[in-house]
Length: 430
Ligand code: CMC
Figure 1 (cartoon, rainbow, N blue to C red):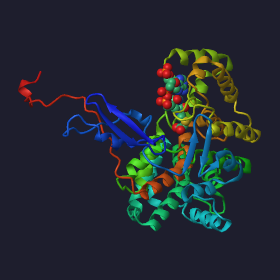
Figure 2 (figure 1 turned 30 degrees about the vertical axis):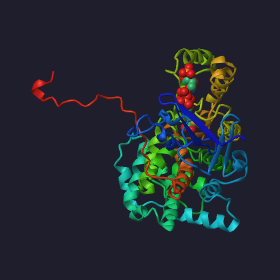
Figure 3 (figure 1 turned 135 degrees about the horizontal axis):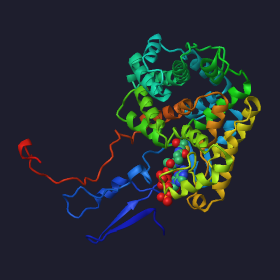
Figure 4 (figure 1 turned 45 degrees about the horizontal axis):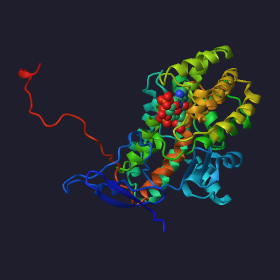
C-alpha cells in the first residue's frame, strides 16, 4: 500500500527518517530532526531565490506555468479580462467571490469616495526634484500615507484593514497622476467622482493637455491592463509585501516596500526596459544582430520582456495584450515599434536558444507599446503596473494576516564567513 511519505536515509549515520508529504510538498522544518549528534541544529534546505520553496498556502491566484494558465480565485484570466472591470476583479481578489450587483455598487462608491489625497501630500510631492522617477515618487508618497492614517497600524482590526485597503486602491491612481503632472510641471488635477476608475485616472493625468484622447476604448484598455496585472501569486513584490507585513507593519508602509521591489528591471521595471530595447534596435533590419548579441552575451544582455520564472510557455497575459494593442492602435495610430517587437518575437520563437530555455514573451513585452501609444512616458510604465498590482498585494497581505501558520518572515542562512578571531587594534592592522 503506497504511503504519502518520503523516507530519507542519512548516509552519515545510517538512520532512516519518514517525512509526511502534503500537497506534493514536505515541510522544511521536518528536516530538522535529521542530525548526527543530538546537539546539532538539524538539517536545513538551501534555496537561494526560492526556486523550490513554498512560503505560504494561498487560495488567491493559480498559475500553471507549463500550460500558460492564470486564474484568479478559479476564474481564467481571459474571462475576467473580457467581462469584468478592474474594480470587480479587485473585489474578487480581496473577497474570494465576484460581487453581486449591490456589493459591486457599494464597493465602487467606497473606492470613488476615497480617491482624494490630503493637501499636505501634494506639498510632499512638490518637494521632489523635477526629474525624479515617478516610481520613486510613488513609493515615497505611499509610504508617507502611513503618517496620515495612524489608524492603519490597527492591522488586527478587520474594519480598519478594510478601510486602508479601500484608501490604497482609491489613492494609488491619484498619487501616480500627481507624480506625472509634477514631472512635466503641470498643475495637478483633482479626482472627479463622476468618472470611472480608469477614466478618472486618465483625466487626472492628461486632462487639459493635447495628450487627452477621451475615448472609451482607451479607458477600457487601461482597465484590462490593470486586470492583467492585478495578481501573480508569490512574485518578488508580493513576497516583499508579505515579508514586510509579517512584522505587522501598516499596509501603507508594506505597499511602499512592494512598490520598491516592483521597481527593478527584472520585475515590473521590465516594461520600461522593453521600450528602451526596441528604441535601441531602431529598425526591423537590426533585429537578427540584436538577437545574436543576446545569445552571445550569455545572460549579460537579455531580451527584455522575454522569459519568466514560472511561465515556460506563452504568458497568457501577453496574448491578451497583443490583441488589445490592435484596438488601441485603431484609436491612437499604430506604434511604429510594434513591427520591431513582432519581428523580435518571430525570430526568437524560432531560435534554438530561446526554444531550449522555454523563453516566451511575458506580460511586459507588449504592454509598453500600448502605454506609449496612449501618451505615457516610459518612466510611468512601472507605475501603471503598481496601480494594477495593488489589489493583489493587499489580498495577499490580508490572507497572510488571517493565516494562523504564518509568523514573522525570517529565512535561515548558511554562514560561510570567518570563524571566531581576536580583535586587532588600529596600530596592529595593515
Ligand atoms: N533573454 C535572454 N536569455 C534569457 C532571458 C532573456 N530575457 N531570460 C532568461 N534567459 C536565459 C538565462 O541567461 C539562462 O540561460 P543559461 O541557462 O544559459 O544560463 C536561462 O535563460 C534561464 O534563465 P534564469 O535567469 O535562470 O531564469 P529566472 O527564472 O531566474 O529569471 C526572469 C526570470 C524573468 C528574471 C528572466 O527571464 C529575465 O531576466 N527576463 C527579462 C526581464 C523581464 O522581462 N522581466 C519581466 C518578468 S514578467 C513580469 C513580472 O512578473 O515581474
